[in-house]
Amino acid sequence: MTIAEPATAAETTVRWRMGASVAPRRVPVAPAPRRCYIPARGGARAPARDVDERPTRPVTAYEFMLILDPEVDEARQEEVVHRVRDIILGGGGTWDAIDPWGRRKLQFPIRKREEGDYWVLRFTSDAATLDEAQRVLSITDEVLRHKAVHQARPARKAEAAAGS
Image (tube, rainbow, N blue to C red; front, side, top):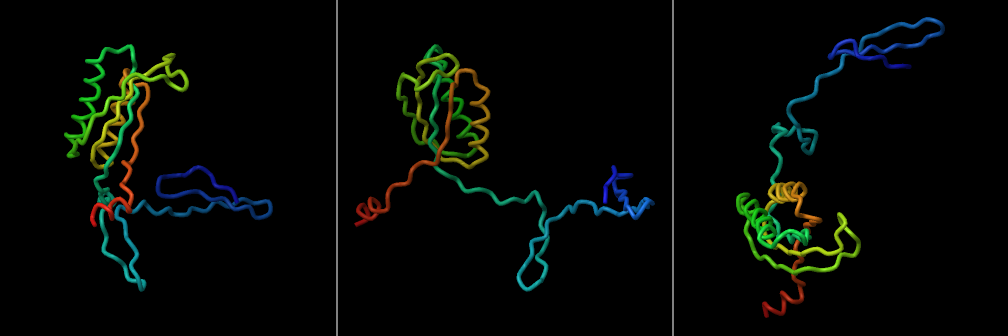
């Protein structure tokens, strides 16, 4: 059995080989559904919901590590950090801390730089705002590397000791 190119958008030509003859046959193709049906238990059909109605992700605490180009002056580095802060605050997040670590030697050269200025940013936001901040940092020339991770939660023993 071989499949040829679609004749139209709604049908596909399927050719069957039976001995020496080839007989074309048209098979209708169903259009893509516009609504998403979520199956319910017991075979009953759940109410339909639009595909665009996706559940929102919760607000999470993040820690951002930035490695900035050491050849850029400090005022420009602070401008990059404040641009990230403005994106986070504009997206409805909260800002916790800015922690400049200073200049450190890199493990390997990045863009022919042996050193980099490290900054740690702590904030709380949703995933969409974090994605926008990462997009802006990826196209900013002063940023050598950036990494966002979930902020570490305190240990349960420490929470229990503090609560007692």
